[in-house]
Image (cartoon, rainbow, N blue to C red; front, side, top):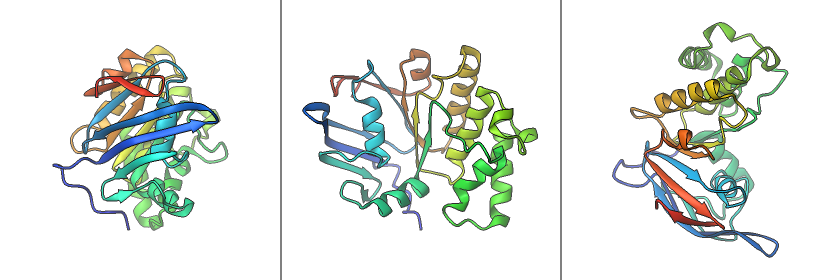
Length: 230
């Protein structure tokens, strides 16, 4: 079962002294900050400044060399791969720049898969997937394969998939970086709408000031450290 939601008076995510090295290179250097439930936080900085590595550490893809990452009551550092997979499937949603949809599954099936992985019965999956397709403006595209969708439509499916299991936290890595400006603006507005009014917290890695503007706070990185906005 997913952990109980944190109190609105307590941080949803607490990162304390997280350090990560790749060989001799320090990619993250004692990074610390917290995110409140429902808060939207942008991570900005030049390429190689540690933003995506931090996102990967939060999502359990990379493991920090030192420091602590707490999601609600759960300490993520030190969990084994199976426990981290459980956290990703139940409490975290991820949106990628290149969508990462399964090419042989329809839009409906790509979204449904997130619910299948956590054991939601089919009669409960159907209304949830249908609702999400409507919310992202793709009600008429349920049977479309990714190859039959535009880039903006594929990203809408990816957003719906990330939200399907009602995560407490959504991690978005340059979600508009592979889209033209019009589609990018539409995706940003959709993210803002879906994370508002009691929705999940959002951590958004971006190079775009326009994308960062949908967030209430921007943390600026340089050389693996937060140099502004903490």
